[in-house]
Image (cartoon, rainbow, N blue to C red):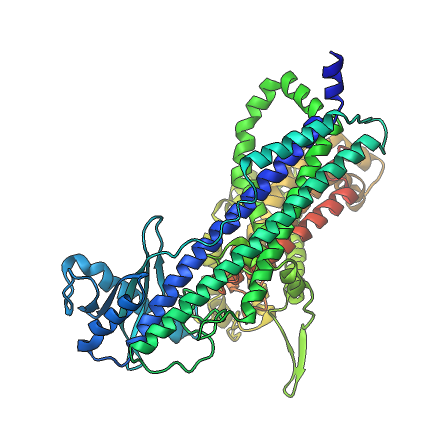
Length: 637
């Protein structure tokens, strides 16, 4: 019993659990990094070779395509096969069963469709002046060659596709970082050390706790250094392998008799949008930019390992402070209650918390349409997005044509969001309060009908209401301008100026918001005892005094939470701005949430939009905290 009591008060379990967690997380992080590097190397190699083959075919007559393709497959064993499709013709192929050139067969229709898709992507990018469509296709299935399809260009025009099947090269050096036996030995060592440590949880500073923390950190730092060294070796091997592929491809390219390459940077090592990565030279050397990319990966892994160390340390403290024991006792005592809430908590974790924290993590990357397929660690940029958002004070610019307002600036959008929220909440509360007072009048005939009619704007889906109001504000056919013309007033171009465009959203949202406030306030008014007003009348109080001294104070417990909720709703009122004014003119009437949407789904800046959304969340969190603290909205009266 004494031994069990000693073990319970020692740091043995905490040390063993902390070291095991650090080892497991670091192994997972390193293994994930190795797998990503190997997959990226395999796909880069295939893309490089496919682009090189396509480049060598420029200017080659149709009857010479097969000979040039054979030069490639003879010189590079990694090229399992190559096919060239132009229109409905299979111009060339290194597969014996194809017997090219010939017309495409019915079962080869996917090749024809793929050529059309890549052509459309290229034309879209050229026509819009923005690269947003992928012009390469990569098909990478486990255990099979990587299939890469790239454009085939003849006489400077898109003529078809080149599809290459590339056998994966030998995987880069794997950094397992120690065997399972070594990990088990470290955990056993930590447990043995912890057995002889006594921790006094009643003291803030205890030597046993300090030794346990020191042991854990020493083992964790040793593992971290080993992982980082292995990661550096993997990256160096990958860069060297890609440099060899580039050099071999350049040598075969020369043997084909194709025009010499004049660029210093490899034009074949590209992303899926045909943009050169700039990591290799044309003759097969690793460029300095590759070293910078390698450093970025290493830094991310180092920070991730530090996070793993911190988690291990927290787990150690969880045991040595006695929290683990208290948790175990609570689980045993209230097992039924935890079993009941477990499904709800799992659902919240999957449907709410995971998307929320994923969005927060996305804000610390540079994720766009072009690099979304890259590993997370290669997209990590820290606080750069927040610095761009909050550090840009260029609201008004002065030039030769005078001063202009930058409507895309964050602080302009924040100002418009605040104005939008304040005015809309004021309108909604004011009209809702007035109508609630009217409906609360004793002896009002047809009260039930008025309640039904006034609740209709809130009952109709708001996007339908928004579209109806947009049509009413139409400059030419809208009923509002037609009514103005009936009275001899010139029609208004509602969406051409900042103020008039803002008014369209204010009117629409005011129409939608007053019924909610009316219902809330009316319910609160009906709960006020009538005898308080009768006593006030006996004392000679005027209606204004009754409003100030009785109605408003008794409405406060109901009105303040409703106003707080209305502020949050209005701050994020996406539908009205997006569907009515569209933020016109020139984005001047955007609010933060519509701006974040357009950044994500029109400009494809996913990480920047996530940072915008994070800022919105922080603003509302701070507002909600101070508002409820100052108004005591969640406290009983």
